[in-house]
Image 1 (tube, helix red, strand yellow):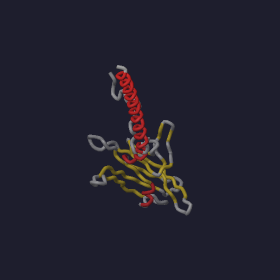
Image 2 (tube, rainbow, N blue to C red):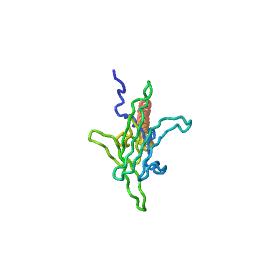
Image 3 (cartoon, one colour):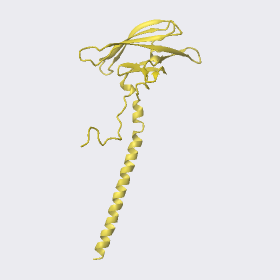
Length: 189
């Protein structure tokens, strides 16, 4: 009768989490002096499995902040998951933005390079996440945090326990009522 997932209308699939994606962090790159005003740098960013040290992915980057009015970052990488070898080669250009800090210095930000139905995103973000086939912000990729998925888990369990207790009370009241009726019936004989 029913098809796939029939009878499970109220259940939603979990969204992909930020922690499950590869990410580039502007603050980390600033600490590593990759993002600095008035310079041009190239390099490679790699991700490895922490437990084994096996290489997960790597991208080549070029940062150019010589023109203070238009600093940019270019990411070059191959798309993974192709059985015949590396996939198509992708080059994404990301605009960089700075904001001044109260006690001097600069904070670097990425502008999200993704283009949606309503046009370019352009959000100023600290991190870009790789999901699908491009780097973009958390909102464009519809990513969530693991902590958000677990935040109300205890409340849902408590609600389910209360519901079961209510059902048990109804059953116990019904049994008590049936017991009284039985006792009245047998007392009359």
